[in-house]
Length: 259
Image (cartoon, rainbow, N blue to C red; front, side, top):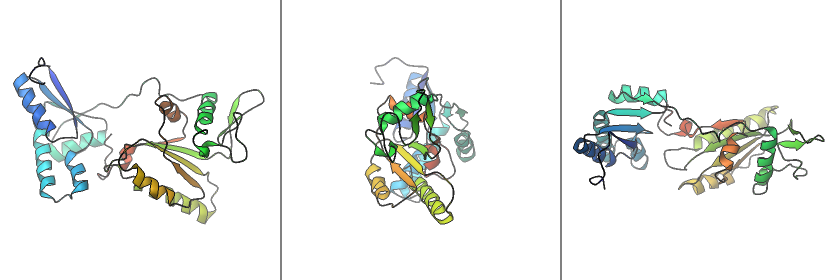
């Protein structure tokens, strides 16, 4: 197909995957007179090392391949300064940082809008329901006042959300270990801290694996749910939560915020 389309000024490719994508796109850029621009989301060789190991011959070849073709590109993009600095230090690749900009749908909600969403979610996830009684006037987080205004309960749990594709390069044991530490601290110190409701959204191959781990926990102050949200509800939930965890913090490659 690439032979049939008209030549473009730029060929933009996301990395990973790097094999054979980078080589194919570089060859096409030479034939078409285009400039190859790589959008770096992670290192392909480091993901391969998750299923093999970092000393495996194929991983070493993949690393060399990715470095060479990365250096031969005309331009490079990434979304964090950490990735930019690592590309420069590791392979002498200069990249421009272009940070994500959310659409207008991603915004902070009013208390009334938050209450409506939580009321909807508690129909499928009882964790959002009030402990004593739940109806459209009251949830675990909110209550409708006599003047129809909405207030947040003082004893509400902290609501945390993290999105994921449940793949090998996202090590959610980091988050689960942190939640275990929180649970242990609250129990042992009798600390005056809120309970936590953590919602991890998304679908992927490792979801059932982590769901089994979550189900085995006998936590008293921490709850973890793994909902699959409607497209319209995801940005609303982000506008409702009190803490958002980026899956960039969960990447297995040490110390870098890739995406």
